[in-house]
Amino acid sequence: MKILILDDAEAVSARAAGEIASQLSAKPASVLGLATGGTMEAVYEQLIALHRDGRASFAGATSFNLDEYVGLAGDHPCSYRHYMAQKLFDHIDIAPGAAHLPLGEAEDPAAEAERYEAAVAAAGDIDLQLLGLGLNGHIGFNEPTSSLASITRLKTLERSTREANSRYFPEGEEPPRLAITMGIGTIMRAREVLLVATGEAKARAVAQVIEGPISARWPGSILQMHRQATVLLDRAAASELELLDYYLDVHPA
Ligand code: F6R
Image (cartoon, rainbow, N blue to C red; front, side, top):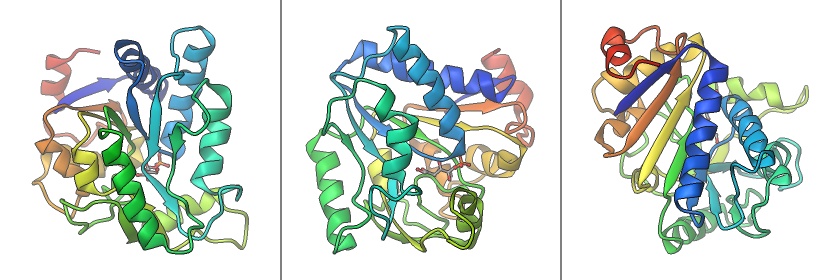
């Protein structure tokens, strides 16, 4: 794992956006794996700025998002389809139909998960997978004890995840209990992964994922087995790392 620790969240999101832009210029027909959540909002803002400057074109790219809530139609303001349109797709040149998310409103969500997994495989799997990190160590919505070999499927969200995400839902409305998520096995097939975490609240999960044992208790820890994984952190998210000085020495900011 390559551990890059930058001064603050702004530097982290600029770096993450830069990595995606470099991927697109090296391979315009890249298959990108995308994530949602608070951390990614700043990354997408920077990516839109790069696109406006002519430094990132998505015209030849395909994307697959990690996950979607079950039961939310794409036009629901809290669906990830809506989030992606608002925060990224409506502002870039990705071709219509090239940006994929699981269909949250599918009549048969289990069949939809199977279809989605097959679509990722048919696209040749992901070139660069962008990941955020849950407080409980989840990647995508692969909650603790998810099989480290899992593929796209239905997953019940942990209470802490639903609480963390309830800030996006109107008062009185709760995040759904179920989501369709790419599996850990699906994510591990990506040729390159970029995990982004910022803020002190993530420090414990970051330390477990990078320095703890590989375990389904902290699903992101499987990335220790990935051949090309980069973890981008700000100082706050890196604050519980035992080998902090070593990482800073190997990759000075
Ligand atoms: C959502 C996803 C999740 C988030 C994670 C962190 O598509 O993949 O794993 O990345 O829950 O979310 P934030 O950034 O809101 O803390």
